[in-house]
Image 1 (cartoon, rainbow, N blue to C red):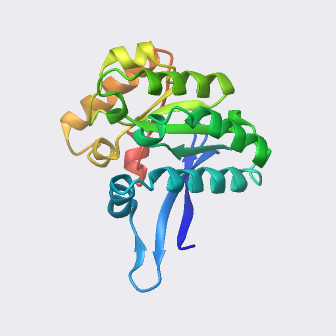
Image 2 (image 1 turned 60 degrees about the horizontal axis):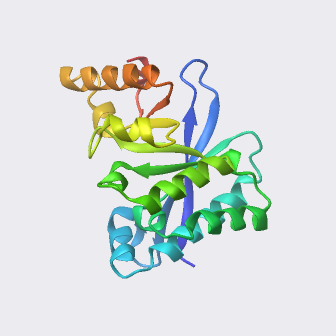
Image 3 (image 1 turned 90 degrees about the horizontal axis):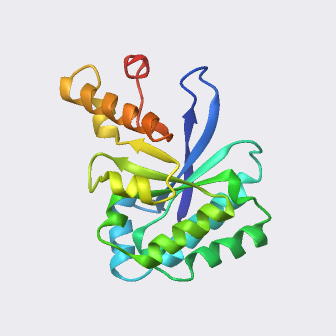
Length: 205
């Protein structure tokens, strides 16, 4: 009962309106304070509890999203969850139980999911897309980026990693990478989101 979800806003660059929210899990420890998922997610993966933790996050996000009509809610999904053959069926049943529409949600997956061929992952992604979930590729540009994944899989959005956004206007290479990712996304008909925009200068860039 010590896990909680915080929500980070996603805003539209054109007019600044709130377009969605990203669910972020935190551990509110009674003596250590707020613990980052960077510390406890790997432990959950290692000891086999990531499915229970992932289900908790999805269920809580589904419940909270019922209050936010018209707002997309993004939730991170791990490779371990996607490798579970029953994952898409479980999510479909959870949506029915919680009385939410998959079209309100965006599932964020990291590039590490796509290391090698995996029929189970591809089948789950295809079914989730068929159900109406949007699929976003998280931390784009930092891992195993390959155009073949963007062409072969039902990805609808790519998310530029915050490490590039932090250095916008400070590092010529960061500017070049961000510009290239945006051009790539447009060429493939994908949406794009910049993670971690915290200053007016970054937003203008």
